[in-house]
Image (cartoon, rainbow, N blue to C red; front, side, top):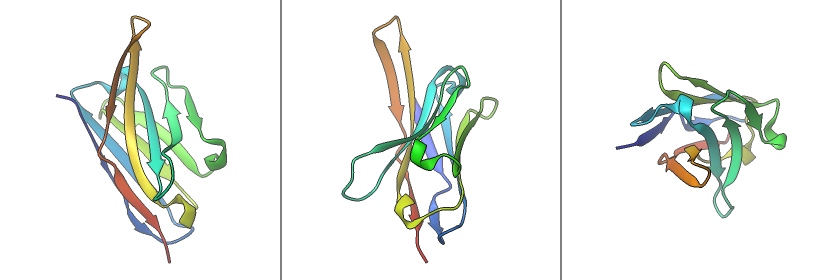
Length: 120
């Protein structure tokens, strides 16, 4: 059984930092393309950052310079470091694991999400 469990969310003041973690069981995160998504109330889910199974990273253009994605394969954990947080970063942050194999088959898993609230 595959599980992705996020942690590290909470309430932070504008300008502050948070580090989110997503610990996997049942899969090896190093084999998957791992991503963070977020969804704010009343808005569509958006892609925050991705780290591929070849260690290529990509962060949404609007978040570059403030957010960093990384992975520790030994701990089977994905991370998202968020700095200089703004109220508009308030959202539920979820991790995603995705693997395409044999060209058309896709294994995809989601965590339950962790709430990040940026407010004074």
